[in-house]
Length: 214
View (cartoon, helix red, strand yellow):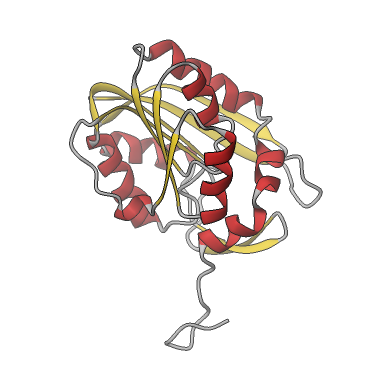
């Protein structure tokens, strides 16, 4: 596939996740580190906190766990299939079809924002800009959880669960610098090696940054 300039077109994230659907949940929702990250977040939240989940996928585990604990959760995702699945599976949360890069965000309008592995198909510039906007959307002292695959790559082709994608990310130190540059303090970080439950998936490093807005 080529773009209007004759180059290779960038695969659209919504097309990938429309195709993956519930298979993505089966592959990743069992991550012990992800559940431990949610437990850390729950310990910091006041009752009825307002939370934005960026790249909410099927709603599991993030929105389901947070809404189940009584919090007001808004999930956003670019995939219509994922939004439909999440709305059906997690009726206690709200889900919106939206690109987080274009989502209007009011200053200090959320108590917490979660971003679990939803940055990887954005450019490095887009990731940096979005995290800055998300940090400002959290009240001072509020919480931002960022999770990524910490590898030093910039717009490289990759096969993800049998589908072609292009990936950008940062090594761990660069991702931590991105968070600090957005006005966040890294309170805790955790690195693990996780193997998704999928025949075409390989072990991958996962980095979780638990942050507070300055």
